[in-house]
Structure formats: C-alpha cells, structure tokens
Amino acid sequence: MTDMTEITPPSALPARLRALLAGLCLAPGLALSAGTGQIFVSNEKDDSLTLIRADTRQVTGTQTQCKRPRHLQLSPDRSRLYVACSDDDRIDVIDVASRKTIDTLSVGEDPELFDLSPDGKSLYVSNEDDALLSAFDVASGKKLFEVKVGEEPEGVKASADGKHVYVTSEVANMVHVIDVATRKLVKNIQVGNRPRRFALTPDGKELWVSNELGASVSVIRTDHLTVAQTIEFAPKGLRIDNITPVGIIMSADGKRAYVGLGRANHVAVVDTASKRATDYILVGKRAWGLGLTRDNRLLYVVNGLSDDVSVVDTASNKAIATIRVGRVPHSVVIDD
Image 1 (spheres, rainbow, N blue to C red):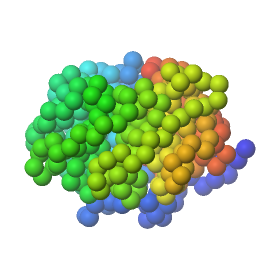
Image 2 (image 1 turned 90 degrees about the vertical axis):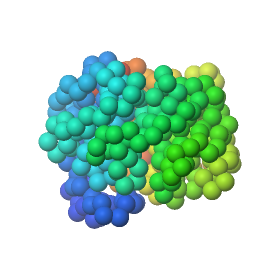
Image 3 (image 1 turned 180 degrees about the vertical axis):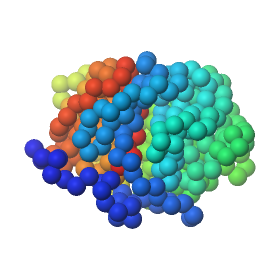
Image 4 (image 1 turned 45 degrees about the vertical axis):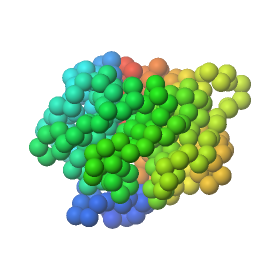
C-alpha cells in the first residue's frame, strides 16, 4: 500500500501546474482559484456539510447549511461552491475561502442535481416534481427559460461547448437534449432503465449516462446524439438487482471512468477505450457520489447508507481509508 503521507498534496503545487495535471479547460477570461485543501460532503438528513482536510483526511468541522443539501458543484474558477437545497427550493452559493453563504438562488421545487455553463454564468437545474429543466442567470438570479421534459428529471449536464444541456428522465428512460440558443428540446434519446447521472469525456465527444435499474451505462456520441454502446456491470457474487449505478466520474486524461454501483457497495473501474469494466472496488454501503482529486490519485466515494466516505487509491484500486461524515451523505467536492 502506498504511504500517502509522503506524497506532496496537490494544494502545495503552483496553480498552473495543478491545472495542467487535471487537464482543466477553463472558459476564456476565467482564472483558476488556488485550492483551499478543503473537501465538502453534503449530508441530507443532518442538513449540513462535513468539512474534511484534503492533506490529512481528517474531519475539521460540520457546517449547518439548509434543508436536505444534496448536489454540490464548484464554479469553473473554483472560488464558489453551489449547494442544492432540496427542501428549501434553492441553491446556496458559498465563498469557498471563507465558507460563508454569500447568495441564494430560488430555483423552483425540489432541486437535486444541476450544472453550470462552461463560463459559469448560467445554472441549469432539474425540477423533479414539475418535470422541468430550468435555466437561471447566476449574477441576477433571474429565470432565463424552462423546458418541459420527461417525468422525474434528475441528471443535468451542459455540453463542453455550452450549446446544449442534457437531462435524464428516470420514468421515460430518456436523455433529453435542449438547445440553449433556441431554448427548445431538440431530441430525445432512449437509454437504459432509470437513467440518473452524467459524465462527459474530456474531449466532449462522449456523454456517459448511468442506468440505475439497468445495471449499465449508456455511451452517447455527442456529434450525432445516439447511443453508441452500452456497458454492463456484473461483479462476481452479486445479484443483478443489487447493481444500481448512479454516480459517475471521468479521470482527467479520459482513460478511466469510475461508476458507483449503489447497493452493490462497489465502484466499477472502466477502461474508456475498450468500454469494459476492468476492476471492481469494495467500498461502503450504497456507493453513489464520487469525487477525484485534481491529480487523480485519490477517489472519494460517498456511501449513503453507511454514513461515510471511502478513500480509494486509484493506482492500486483499493480503499485505503474510511471517513465518518453525517447522516445520508449525498455528494462530495474536493477543492485541492
């Protein structure tokens, strides 16, 4: 096992080098904020965020935030943290350096997942109860538009060029494609059973969609908006109905994808070239939310039913630590 204490933490490296390591592609005019070395985990049942130091992996505190915080996301320049407050019908905006809430955006009923445009100026959120994709101007908080989509929308992803927004419908088993310029739904793509979340390959050419009740991931080509391949998961000794993929994240170089398999209590490691699972990593109970450090050496896995976070060494594909957090953790963000 690698002694992680001997590795220079990414937060100690120059910002430019960290950006290169992570393969970040910022929109023109955006500067990269220096990492604070802080990890944030949202806890649905405790209405709080757990704060963890990235270098020591020690919990440094708990911050009461809002009712049922769920999805977390950093702004493109990494200076702000956005928090979906599902039972408060809003998005909180936190200054990462001070950890203080500096703004709130009213975004409609029960926001769970959202995404920011590549330039950070627009926010797209799924309103599950209303079957809507809603778009907001971040600076003013004003609604830009809304588009009717399938029942129980969840996953939201802006395309790499910012021209499209993709939305999953859990009931319709579809990915809806919305044209930002015309503000209209332009295509429906049939995928697997109960699609949940997205990941884009770094080149923006493939959109990966986790199918929770299909034990699979659908790979969509973004040039012609069709499913090019389906990746199925089958860890040994597990029943198919316990393999429930939800969280998904890509490595910075695009060579690996990691998929949280939910009730299977494993994370699948997928070779993106061959589209095959090469390994399965044992973690905690109901592995859903995922986060990678900017150097891609560590994968943080949020385990919703064991109230903890597994830390995985991506070189060995082994969990090397477990961090206790709050009740029913949902998402993790790493500001290293």
